[in-house]
Length: 152
Length: 104
Length: 254
Image (tube, rainbow over the protein chains, first blue to last red):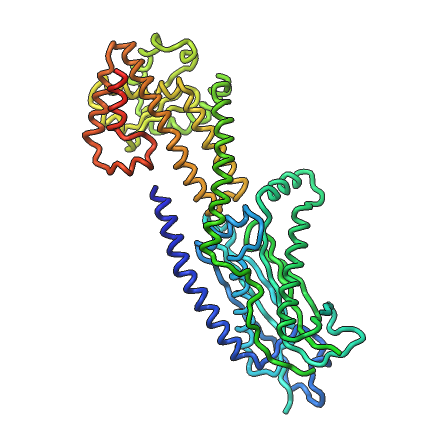
């Protein structure tokens, strides 16, 4: 009985706070994506392809951005139920989408005003799985690439 | 839409690029398939249900990436990479990304 | 290679839809499927329960006994054992095949249980509530009623089926398992209230056979009614029927 009450409270709490959090996160992601739009990111590794004609490279350095995000209780329940019925698991899709975009943004922001980031790689890993009873549905996304500055 | 996993489209030249495009998906099979796969695990061999699931997911992820590229006005995606991860139990998570370009 | 900055308007990587509506749809599917599966399995187990052999049952009982023997109050166990032994001549030959053993354990809960193999576990919390010998005989007769109806196997079987099902499907640690298990326990309790009624009526019959009256049953129920201050709706979540209701059908049976 008590367990059921706690369960529903967590569900409602997770839903309300979780959706507010997600909405705010998406808002901030969209704003910052607009801000960092002038900086191009590609996953090619041949410098000749990227180099603008007549330009020389001044510096190249590794830039990284990483984030750990978790989904709320409500979505976790939703995902476990969705596992019984076939189809897209929407709650995890938003989690992964948010994680990847955030990691790329952080990588872009970490770079010291370069002209282009090349050879982008994205790694996703799961953390906190089966560490305790209520396993944490959280992911770590790491985005890394090489920031190139041209000579002017 | 031309898709390649090399840095260019051989035989064509890249005119302009639009940055990274990506598609991701998390999909699950229904419980019956999960149980069947669990049973099949005892004897080994191909898990048809899961092969299908992964193929569907990969296709959906690719389609989503193509949609992004189309919206940007690209006609090719180069240097495509596929990746899988495992957050949700029993669900497949596919991720695909590449650089959207315009070739002539 | 020229860079053309452009923003995407649509987020194609997330399937559109509202999570709340999705939850309702999913719940309907999952709960519907599970209830159907559960009812079918429950029927199978109930049908099988009467056919479990004595040997299997005593074997199962031994497993439980190892856990129960801790904190035993030996003196009380002996006293209650005598009362149970007194019932033997009044049991049917089928019921007599089991070797009934009483364990009184140190536990503040007001409860008693019938376990496979003929073990009756009485918590000391219940003993503290009981004031007379005749009330005690009613409680023991009630547990004997569970053995008579083989509820101890049915309940166990269904709970086992539910547990095995949810663990295999969802995994041990998933929160959905907890949720589904909780809801199954609720349903199980509703089933069990009918079994409690049957056990009560059996106990009344047994007491009448042994003593010629069922004074203990009435006394105990009246006491429960007096002490019961909880809201009636709360009994939806309880394993036993409301004491007032129990008192009524016991009176009717007399």
